[in-house]
Image (cartoon, rainbow, N blue to C red; front, side, top):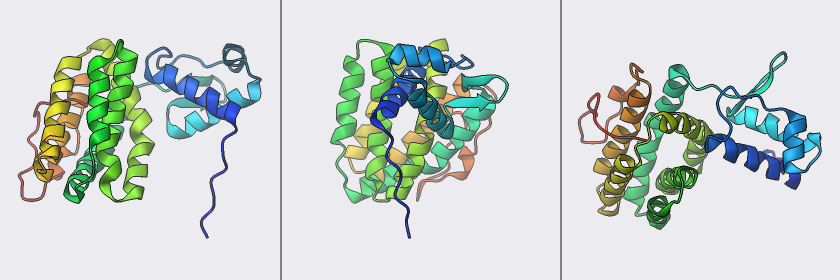
Length: 234
């Protein structure tokens, strides 16, 4: 018998989304302490919803809870990036390939690209880029696959936030996104998946030089393995 998830109280959800937004847009940086009393004052709530929100964020990998150091924003290093992006490389191109073969609507992906192009700041652009990737994999026809990618989505965004703060490259990313979407809209499932794979792989390798990814093991059906070092960005 499948258990039903317990709904998160509205105050906790409000705080959770607020803290997550600050982390993923760089307002709260890796390693920064998250003090319950300070956050409660900022959000105008008691410490209870803050505490529950932080527990949830720890479960998603965005924050770390330590008995001695308290709660901090998760640090980003090459090992963390490799773990998260290995999962994306294994799952995300396949999800897109399935979505294209199903003839799924990609209107949401097109709209997210438009929002990214029209964004007034890096925070807005970052959120639009996250929605673009989700709009590619979500209609894959396998809800479990979509949920698995959702589980690493926030951690991938944290890696991206750190990398973009050091070396923003929005124009390059936008061009790659447009090419991936063009291939998908043309119905070329394998080419779209291969382009997405290269896009994800080379981003983390540029952001964290020397990071080894298991990209050589992935093949689009009927295609050669994506070459090491192929250009792209997540």
